[in-house]
Length: 416
Image 1 (tube, rainbow, N blue to C red):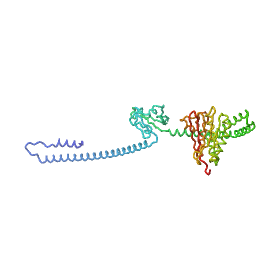
Image 2: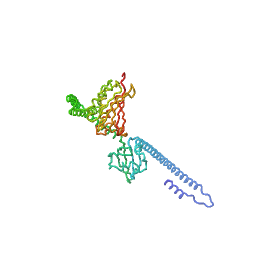
Image 3: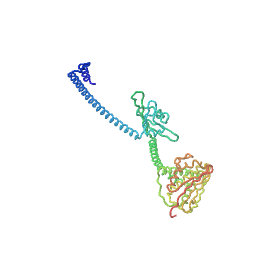
Image 4: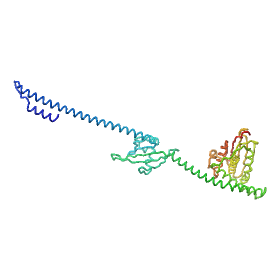
């Protein structure tokens, strides 16, 4: 009740209180005065009530304004929360927040994809993430790369972290940014490897071209020496050794050029038997040098193939050299041309009785760089490349200790 109302009421009740009469009726003037005092007090009370209503209305309006502001603030906070959550979920990198006790508090889908076993509230020590959290010496903002291995799967994770002070100062939360850079590192390695291969190819191509000219000159000289020394004598053996060395060196140069993108050469119909006969003659000094007997058989008569002659000769030479290497103590190399499908496909076999190849290594012999005899490992890879470039196939059968047979299958030239 308002102080003014209380004061008026007290005064009215105290000073204008009707006297007590026993057995008699009060004077009309006294009643009128009492009624006037009552009306005055009621008026004061009514005014105070109006003041109270106005005050309540004012407070209610203020409360409604405050509530509206609070509602708008909550809406803004909710929109901001949803907006930040969308950003967090849409980030391509993983975001992980860990509290001072080492438990996961927040992680986005990218982080969960990197570490499927991690969940909010779960200690990181129970997951592979422990290698990141406890691994490198961290400094805020610095990025480290950690390699995680799971069986045959290996991933490289780039990590950076920021420590956030807790408002209550009871501890600090740590925010980790995680990126799977495995593919990026793999591409970098492949690009670097490709760059090195290109540089090596350029160098080897230049060297090979520089070597070929003097090789050709020396090959011509040895051919003249054969005619000069005659069909017998110790000097002929020396000439054969010179020819063998030069032809092996020439084959290596040709393999390098072919492997690093040499020209495929002009193709034309040519008799397969004639190519084999020329190959046998060319290989004769080498066979003599290695103590190997050459046997040649042409069972396809005058069948022709569409080929670049020098390239096919290179295949024959590489297969023969491979056979010579497998027969350290001499042996027999049988070269033959057979019909795989009469009138359609030729099969040219190089069969030796050397050391043979283990079954588990047959798939690897055509891979570049693979060699069990200390060579360049390009010979059989070049054979496969040339044969497939001619639309044919090459295959191998081998028995350890008994020898190997390399077979070339080529289509017969149309109109043959």
